[in-house]
Image (tube, rainbow, N blue to C red; front, side):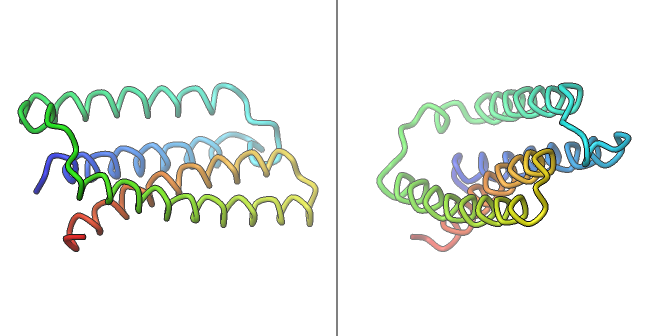
Length: 138
């Protein structure tokens, strides 16, 4: 397994756990889905993602420093490009769906949470696409 595939696996776990944490925060907060998102919900999520990503990437880099410092080869760049393109389609789909929900219900607070969820899902999708493409030997 290449370093970049390991990185995609680790970041999939980090983003999934952080996304679950965000979902737990907004569902456990009293009336959070119907209220404007307080900074007490968004800031812990962002801090969790940043710290989790740093710890994960540093741990991977320390475990295999030569692989971490190696530039991406042509195949790895192609995998990143395709995965980024496909995750952009996921983001666009969820974003348009979120806007459709807003048009139907005129709930701007829910729109915030739906767009935030769209960003989280599309980032997870990007890492999953990278893993799938690394495994398929593109």
